[in-house]
Length: 117
Image (cartoon, rainbow, N blue to C red; front, side, top):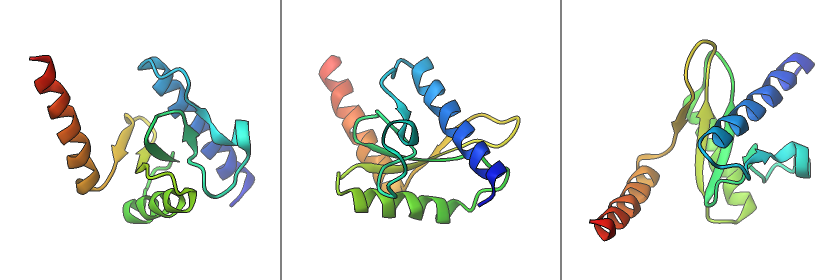
């Protein structure tokens, strides 16, 4: 990976961390800034229970990126949900996850919503 690609990746990680801050998750930070690159930690940490792989690229190989997040998540052994946060130029951020993980999160959301009503 070239220097320009690494710089763009780091900028994407920082951009996603700032997005998290905008939504109130102020403990989120780039992993490389705090612990270096270990190959097990997500690109961004601070979202409890979520392993984040950030991709800031025009064309994303979706399943390759998700598989990387799953591999790194398994290596870390934290039982987190692996996601890919992706944005291309002039587009909004999207979050990619497996359907099984989506439904697991949705079920917890619905259960907590029932408690409120």
